[in-house]
Image 1 (cartoon, rainbow, N blue to C red):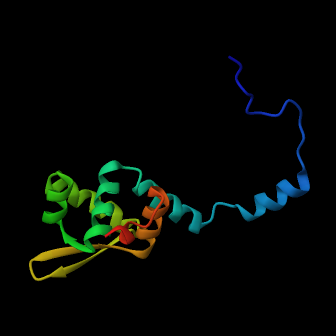
Image 2 (cartoon, rainbow, N blue to C red; image 1 turned 90 degrees about the vertical axis):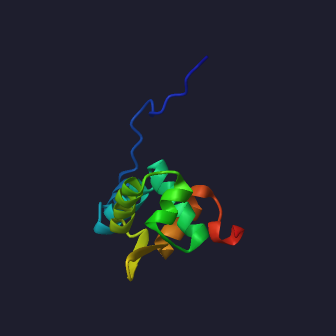
Image 3 (spheres, rainbow, N blue to C red; image 1 turned 90 degrees about the horizontal axis):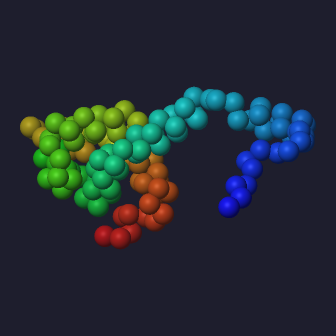
Length: 121
């Protein structure tokens, strides 16, 4: 079985093209935020929480813990990470804290899962 090489056998750098692209792809704050959002959904529990919010629109930690089959403390921890990444928002409703998915969270979820979760309700 032969393994295809992942490197060129000779240096064939097109410096003009490479430098133009390199200038555009500098690590900007926008790229760092995008990487943070993607990293936030890299955990299966957080992905499940965001999926549940896409289906339920607005849920409290108790509901999310029950739906995901995880403890409330664990779900609360994951919600903090998701909120910090801008993928979910929260609001206080008397003694309850209600969570919902953001537009960015919905778009990233759809990209990861390959379809729009809200359209499947």
